[in-house]
Length: 197
Image 1 (tube, rainbow, N blue to C red):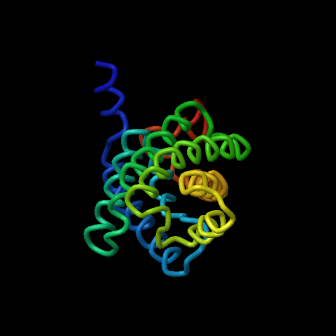
Image 2 (cartoon, helix red, strand yellow; image 1 turned 90 degrees about the vertical axis):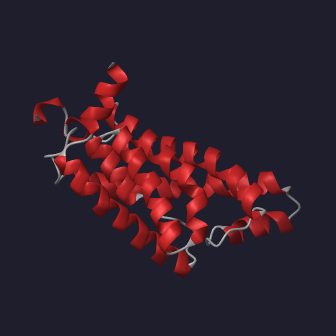
Image 3 (tube, rainbow, N blue to C red; image 1 turned 180 degrees about the vertical axis):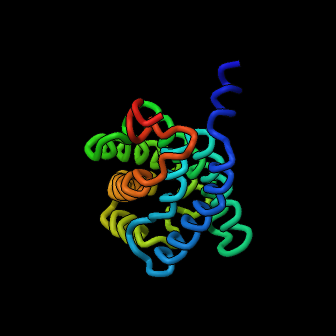
C-alpha cells in the first residue's frame, strides 16, 4: 500500500498542469541543443524540475513522455532514449525526497547521482542502437577516443562519464533555481525543508 500512496502523492492538479509544460521545456531546449550540436544535452530540465517539486513518479512519467512525444512528433532519434529519461526523473525525484534539492551544494551531489544513472543506462543504448555515434555534439569526443585506439564501449562510457556530470549538474541547478518559486506542488519539502508545508 505504501507504493500506491507514494505514487498518489506525486500527482495532484498542479502536477498534471506542470507535466505538459515540463515536456515542452525538455523538447524545445533539447531540440535547440541538438541542432547546435553542443556537447551537452540539457533535455531533462523539465523532468528534473517535476521530479524535485512533484516527486519521483511524476518525474519518471515526465521524462518518459518527453522522449516518446519528442520522438514521435519531431525527432525519431529521441524515442530510444526514453528509458534514460525515465531513470533521470526517478533518480532526481528520490534525490529530492532525500533532501538533495534543499541547498545548492546538495544539488551538485544530486546531479552527480543522476549523471551516473543516466550514463549507465544510456551507454548500452548508444553502443547497440547507434554504434557509439549519435547526433549529439558529445559524439565528437567519442569519435576522438575511438581514433586514439579505445574500444567502442570504453569510448562511449568515457564520453558519457565526462559529459553527463556537467550536463546533469547544470540541469539540476537550473531546476533547483526554478523550483524555489514553485512551492504549491505536492512535495515542496523536497526543495524547501519541512517547514514549507
